[in-house]
Length: 79
Image 1: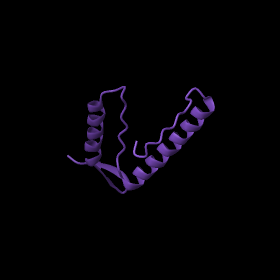
Image 2 (image 1 turned 120 degrees about the vertical axis):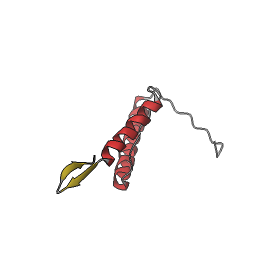
Image 3 (image 1 turned 90 degrees about the horizontal axis):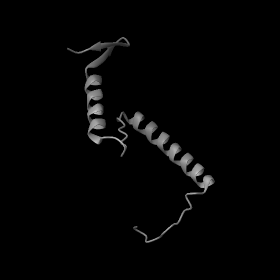
């Protein structure tokens, strides 16, 4: 929209769909790797499910993780 340029793509073309899918998967893997290295959580959302359920699941998992520490490589749970 910023440039005013339009691009029409024949999404029926199987070769295009396969190439596009490979690019998307590669980019997704790169992002996951970068986020993990940065220590950031990843929250993937889908229009097919309730967003609040996904957010609550992430918050719950972070809460559980914050209660766990390790001593000599073994988990120690805070009270």
